[in-house]
Length: 305
RNA sequence: GGCAUCGUAGCUCAGAUGGUAGAGCAGAGGACUGAAAAUCCUUGUGUCACUGGUUCGAUUCCGGUCGAUGCCA
Image 1 (tube, protein in one colour):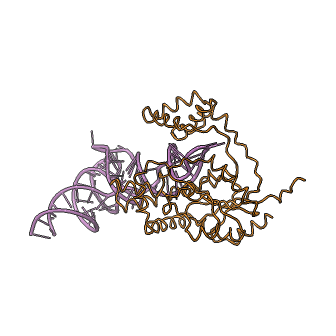
Image 2 (cartoon, rainbow, N blue to C red):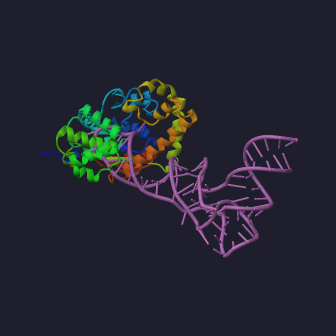
Image 3 (cartoon, rainbow, N blue to C red):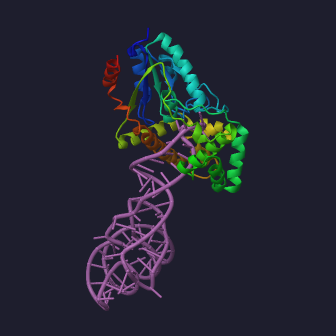
């Protein structure tokens, strides 16, 4: 017999800009639903980064089972393809125990990978990327543009051509797969064995910015400076190209004063929150709430049944 | 008190030998399928401190006022 649609378990997606208060809402919600939490914060994956990523506290982590938190080292290479696969596997396990699972985080692309799916792409050979970076360093963006125009004229027409990261990604796929990047991008929603409800937390801009400033000060008091100093020798790692760390590295370099670095952290966090909102606003499925509306959120989820 | 310099976009500052002005940053908007807390794009009208004068025309020149800074007393 074909299962009724409502027999499918429910994945509750909770997103929103940084510092909006996702963690505490998520924990209360998870308790109320007996759900486990999957993190979708691409920097909370790394165990070396705790204070600067506003990682949930030990009490918070022990009050509800969490997954995909500090499970990686900053030395590991990770990407959304792996994340999608691993989260789907984890959800299979969670849904054996519970009708609900909660995925919480601010990394829109990672959430998209779980909900919508990503197209299958060849595993990337790191040497290709290294070579492309080298080419970019030596000959500039034009060299990448020229290459892409030949290998994938269709994508060349639509990409933001001044964006080296995007050009390099497209090129590495073209080179390692032997076919055009655009031909692999199907963008078809993947089949999922669960239903999805998307919730977003938001606050008026001013209030959010106030919270960001306050949280930055809290991080400094909690010892972010020491955490960053310990990671300073590893600053070249991608995971450390992160707000809260890169500014302090500049301070260690003697480029800026400590107060200036702290101001930069606040500012760059605001920029980040703004980009998150731009991404999330685009998704019409997200139902928006303020972090205080926990009861309304709970009611909405129950109405899904 | 005297002398000097300065007062231009939220901030830091450019600039026009007189024809009402422009950058960086901030702010705002946007893009983004394996680096995503990353990366990239778009967006600048403001009594040019105030007030008289010269001039067809002044924010630009001259005088005064106020404010800031520095030096001298």
